[in-house]
Image 1 (cartoon, rainbow over the protein chains, first blue to last red):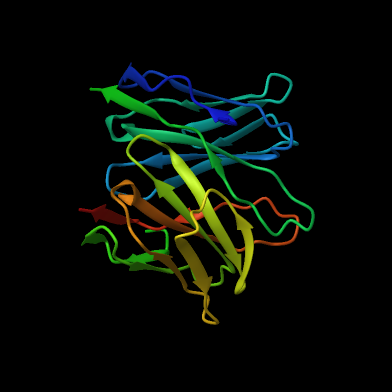
Image 2 (cartoon, rainbow over the protein chains, first blue to last red):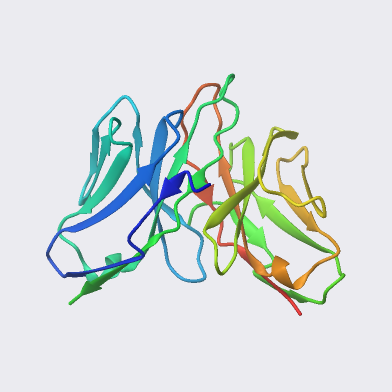
Length: 116
Length: 115
């Protein structure tokens, strides 16, 4: 059962334009969401996160939007740069009683290619 | 650089063997998480340790075990290895405050190849 889904395996955009990566989840207990960027043969690098009490979080060129009613989040990258080309993973966690575990459930990733 | 270190970077071994992967968390982080990334799957949570104690288990095989030592570094032991265990193994760490929603920072991974 895939609780976090990234339905687009790949996305290609032109340099300078907006990249929009989407993620859907099914577990209503998820209350914290993160986006990671991953290059081949490297570990995931944290980009940006959002708590379920917010609907938007912005950090420089990166903005994450959360729509809880639709169980959907998206990552916007504006403007896109060739160095943004990588696999982007959406991840979610559910705070458990006591809060001492925050295991992440990952989507399958979207390969973003930014064309110069 | 996330501050999480993993050794070795690459490991090639044969079926039936046993290997140990090592992880040092970021300074001050109390939680260590292990994830597996196979070719045909995304990142799968294996197990979490918090301040030396097991906190959560995911899809971890019985042939696999882990521990976290008093200095907070962690080891993942994989035994009776099979071809299908070939994967990237990532360690992540976080501070883990009670009730907190925290970011996990990942190490560079260990690439295991079982021949």
